[in-house]
Length: 489
Ligand code: AMP
Ligand code: MG
Image (cartoon, rainbow, N blue to C red):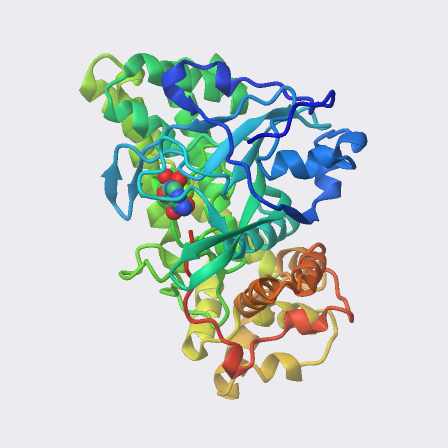
């Protein structure tokens, strides 16, 4: 049963729920027995221009737990399809997520406010529509960390414990609801949903909507459909190169988890790499390494080709002409991705723009040789380049001769000291290390939320030195190492 409406409201300005009815299902969140607010992101609330009297009232917890439909909200579950590990599933959709509505933030941009884990929808199939508390905590930590690291990402507005028990692989666990903020939830899979149904009219509406919401410039292009593709190609090239530059592995780069806005979305079994090797995978469901660290560029390209396919009927009446035109835009991906990737690594290594890429390759080969910690290496290199001691850097390598050889090659090419500023902003000190995330989750399962709060605080300024959070920088002890990550949904 839902709590009766009060006079309060959030400043919703909904557009997706005005699209044709087959774009979504109208669905109210399921009420929960005894919700408890674990965390509300006040700063994000302010950015979203959520009225303080609303966020300080009972409405906050009631609304974000799903127990109350606040005025102005038009809850819907969005329809989408997707290629999961290379196989097309023509119907996925929000099976455990409900979009409450959209808000115009202080920056003038439009954002979705979505609940994750708030009960079944027509897209739930056999799922319970709920979320365990673990994945809620994980997504809160990871998505806010990505944002602080400067990577486009969906955001975390709130984490709630529902007072309900859910059944997962590990047994009975406390349930949670996560409030996600995204510049939209339009996925490559959203286009695939209509493409799979040969619904060209819906595709046209979705394209118009997407251009209007994300890439208004494309409307002026000679062929707006190609214009949209071009923008999405750029956004994905930028995003994936940035992920790789900080050692991030998304883990499930299915087309339903690829947002056309270019934001990182769906933090399932994602992880930050520690010991470097290009084939690094953490996700328990990625058995063949499809989504390994070093394969993310290829997969991004593959996903974009699936996106382009959905646009073909709109690009040109003649299938062959449409395909040729789309291919010419898609073909820009490798160069765009390559130059973004090289730009990030040049900053990380203080290399001038004109430097050849060889030293980037040899740096990564050096790390791969001994599976050196990716984050510590770049950070200690930054400290050393800035006049700090050599030994913390050198001690990362068992074979110091190889390191010394690499170092003298690097020094000849690095643009020092002027490149230090770039290094300092490209090489984070603190990342959400897997063992810390796991510890925060396990503590929360024991109703100790302090490690979760502390980790979120520590990751707010990931490039700044901090005595207080020095333990967050360090590697796991052997017994703390996390080998595998799980979706946990
Ligand atoms: P994900 O692995 O989070 O990208 O989800 C893939 C699909 O499974 C999406 O359609 C989700 O909505 C659906 N799904 C995941 N977990 C659940 C759940 N607990 N109940 C219902 N549907 C779910
Ligand atoms: Mg997903």
